[in-house]
Length: 150
Image (cartoon, rainbow, N blue to C red; front, side, top):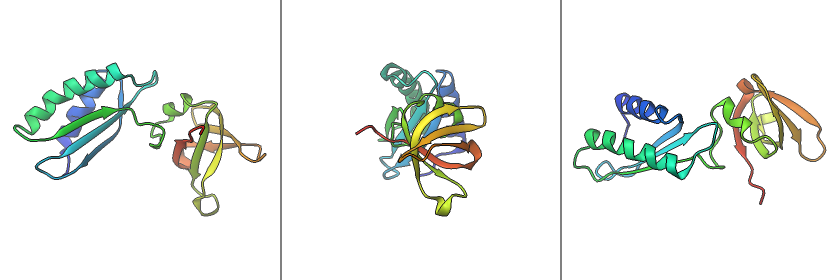
């Protein structure tokens, strides 16, 4: 099931009213019982209360868009396994281990390191296995995720 541009716009506006940003909108399942997953983030961190408030507001939007439908709506933080989308998301993870896929590296292989700093243009990772520090510009990062400490 495709999500209309109008619905995406209304979701963005609703989430923005709560000082949050959409990281991803996913739809799965069958058209008669779709499941909508809305992943949101902000610089302060996503709380259960924020998800509840956004979900409550989005419920009204979805009721108008899909009257009488048997849909399910979930609103949550992106979690550690979702790639970071916005440069500001990196600041929340200084000191944590990241796994990035940089463009132009040998075969776009994953690079793992501790996030040491974030600037307007990129990040500095302390590479694992004694590789020293290396800078990566945001436009060269194809994907970046936090590696759990376990």
